[in-house]
Image (tube, rainbow, N blue to C red):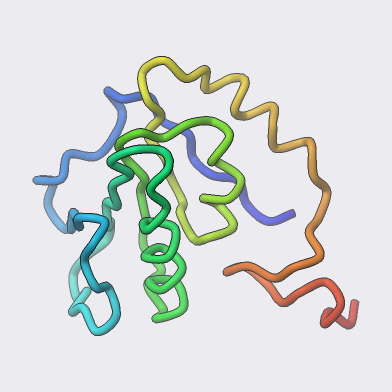
Length: 127
């Protein structure tokens, strides 16, 4: 499996006001954004059942954004793997979440049949 997600505690997360950081609401259209000079995009999960930020992260990666895409808000450890597969590179966990337990979850899957932002579907891979 490719790189893991950088799991952060609430006090380690990027401030939306940080230089070269763009904070977007989860209803923002990300296609066509001018990301010149931006090194981090912060996407918000207002509640764990609202997955629009997954689509935003995926669209940013498909558009070629190579910087940090950070998840903030109501972020649970059981969302981390899907965040990484959707294009997030860092996630700020909700205060009641155990980062160590979230990190252990990475070992549960050695690969995936369907494709993600990091690669083609397994059935389409030649090696």
